[in-house]
Image 1 (cartoon, rainbow, N blue to C red):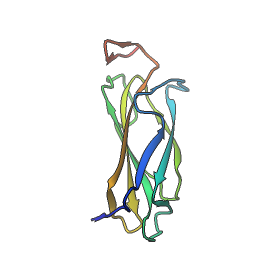
Image 2 (cartoon, rainbow, N blue to C red):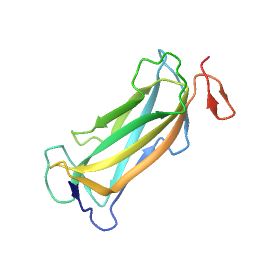
Image 3 (spheres, helix red, strand yellow):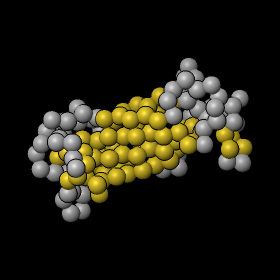
Image 4 (tube, rainbow, N blue to C red):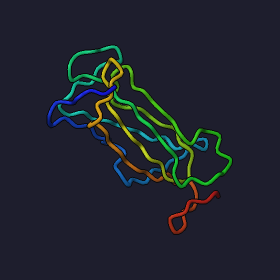
Length: 135
């Protein structure tokens, strides 16, 4: 099921910027502050079914991440049901991660046109010639 977004509507991943390098590991994890924005649509709660209203979903996928004995999943899914526009991810370095934000109406219908993507690199180890490796 999908919904049609108003003309000119868009969403974006404000932070981290596409291509950003994020560091600052605490207890083996890097906190990644994610800020999302919506233009031309209203951000509401999961149960809000008003026209041109919805909430964010964020998929996180590890790409080019070596197997360093990571304990977290290489894929995460976050649904910001309370109308939030920010969240903090705790990700394991080193490597690259893909963030994909989508916008979903209260009835579960996805606004197919409203997708934003960013790729980030986490440091906390050596990165050599585009390949991450454990330290």
